[in-house]
Picture 1: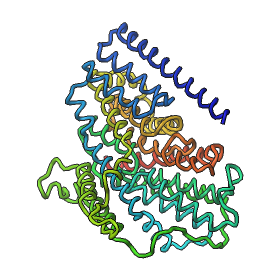
Picture 2: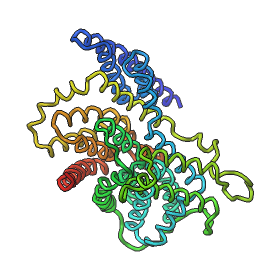
Picture 3: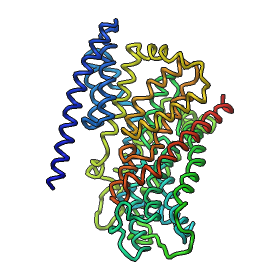
Picture 4: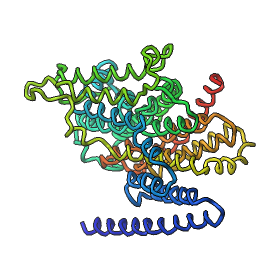
Length: 489
């Protein structure tokens, strides 16, 4: 206990030093920028950009509160207008996040996700360790496409532990760190990695996807629909997921054994499960048909302002309107406000702060300055530039939240695209996807943190298994995105 207190005290002292150092150095950045001829607004933006980057990397203060710095400072000092601030908070991307998270919460509350996982197990009927790992990974990848990858990992890991307990003579709680067998490591890391890879498949799978979509629309004026995203991202998932499965299954036994999927739900579908799943399917259908085929329902109904975010929010409202059908809770809706209170509002603040930061860079002309600074890279082959971007992002993400990293990188990559005279999508999309391919450290992605929190996996194991996958992800995403671009452009 005393050691933990000393460790916490050292950590608090470190954060205090970083907080003070960040304020002092950002003040120096502000003064230096002014001395070099930058305007007051541009100097302010540079100072805020520096302190956000420092605080995001070190987590000197909570990541969502760092995102609040541009939200508070920029409108106060005239860098962005009140209308810009409103667009940062009231952006449809935030509504898509809110609606998606509420659908995810309702899925967990009703335990419909367990039904889907059981369905996958009943179809595939795994009987060996390799098959069990593969089945759990397919379940995690599929679920994380439609709910957040964090929620998918959080749902499946307890089920996986119960399944592992039933297959071992001794309780898995006795297995810690290096004592864990290869099967346990493969199952838990498999769920974690598959949730990250599957989350790449749809816009709502992970927040970096939505950060990119918003930043790209802001940079080009072109919106990316749900189906358009899937056309780019699903091939990456389809190629990368089998590679990850093969990598994790190498040390698993391929002999038959008695391994059963363990869950405590009734075999008969309950009313709330059916209703939540029905709303979920309806929302997904509306997402996928908004702009395709033939203009989608938004064109047929003459709704040019339709957005996936509004659809998600309407779906969330239905959850509060439709009763759950439970006899013990007459009149109770599928979702209550007490349930929704667990919504991760910090992610909403982070996305809003990223939007405000990019607006500040645009309004002050710093995006143009960055573009001119990157002009020296125009002599390099595009494939090398994209590979270097992906490599940088995947390892930067190991040190900070992938959402924070994406929010920081998107304006810079938009500037680089201007300098190279290429579509910003060719630089920004690979970076956003690669942000989900950080498999080494717990702080990189939410699934990484969740699986590390089980105390069954050591950081050494994560680095050993994750490092090759980081590099493979860079290669796969670079080649696939540029390869598909040659057919599209």
